[in-house]
Length: 116
Length: 110
Image (cartoon, rainbow over the protein chains, first blue to last red):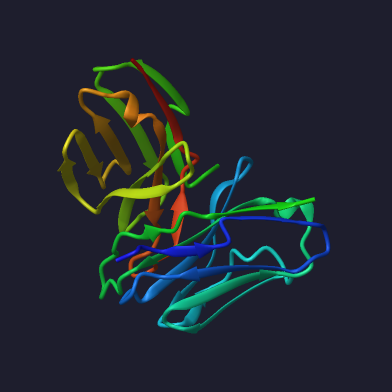
């Protein structure tokens, strides 16, 4: 398996522009997670999905952020409009349905976003 | 106060030394993860444990549920072990949300 795939790997955009980050989870995984990592705050969960349904979006910073999972093999994280404070590395991860027990998560390589 | 605390924040050691990184948490958890983030940025899951001890190669992870504490040990450390090690916990049973520690930056000098 190719692992979790994210695109683009790097994104540089100007303030006010729309940014779309993409993620393809490992085939057969039921959970998909979006994380953000910054120097100041470390790793933070933004949102996670189970079987394409958003379960917990309490980490989404504000209405400028939205995430979708239209099918089991694709998810997007959109920022509109982007701001310089959104600059961070955004990770996508996936895991199996734990069936009552937690499973390890597999991380994608991340997208480094720079908003100028 | 963070719910997950790691120590030390930074650790520099000579090649071959035995390394210990600690993680303490303040609430009940269902499971704890140790993650490794390479200098290039990629994150790899090393261990997930809810009790006892796990070993993989030169890496050993232990957890004491009563004391709310976990340790990650590296035996015969090597420069390629240089990375940031992150502790993360599932705060509620059946909740897949992870809460992260701030990480420990480990540097192994040849």
